[in-house]
Amino acid sequence: TSSLTENHSHRVLFILGGPGAGKGTQSERIVNTYKCVHLSVGDLLRSGAEKKDYPHADMVKECLVKGQIVPVELSLGLLRIAMDEKAQEADSEYGSRIFLVDGFPRNYDNVEGWMEHMPSYTSVLGSLVYNCPIEVLEARIMNRAETSGRSDDNLDSARRRFQTFRTQTEPVVRALEMTEQLQAEGNSSGQSQLHIVNIDATGTVEEVWDETEAAMNAYVKNDILTANMNLLKAIEGGNLDDFTALC
Image (cartoon, rainbow, N blue to C red; front, side, top):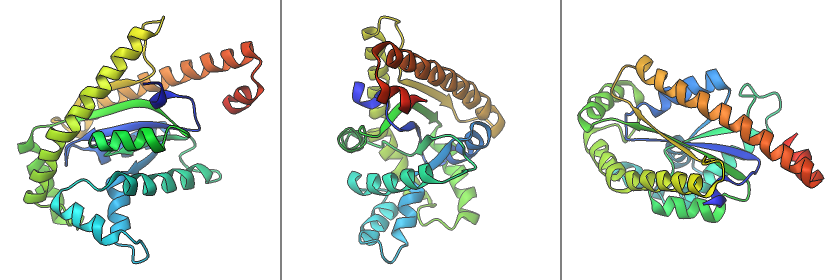
């Protein structure tokens, strides 16, 4: 469990939910309010699928149209490039290096891939999980399809993607919740660095934002407290490298 939350340069918050649950809309508001960086794995994949010089473009496009999960090494490869590019931007409008990773992890293979490739330079704060019934999602997607131009904005793809979310992503959410519980039980303070928040996404954008904002306020407070605790540990231990990194 510790490899998810170890202290490294990129702090990550997973954004999960079925197709049309409002992940992108809420993420945009989080960016504007909390100056985070929003990275949609789906957007990165759709962009990669259209690039003539991307060697896996055809495979990615086929997976998207069929509502299948793209191989984890491809998703993480595009994600790592995007995170590094955003982190290196001087005077970025985002300001902070908290990354909202939208649409990941989608299944256990994604989790295993993350644990294998990402812990060396990321620290996972937790996940916002947007829950919404399929009939609401279908109506939203059909409305969005009128203007989005996305190849996967149709009922067949939406139903396959929703089924994938229910059978493969929801078990991952339960596993993350169990990880949070185990961390809390193993911590003398009774708290976990990993926090999973389930949000009812059936309401209006404003109603969903109220829940999202409350969750983000708790994440920011917890993140500051965690940073201060790690800073004190570095000072007490005389660890100059950790002290410098935290400052």
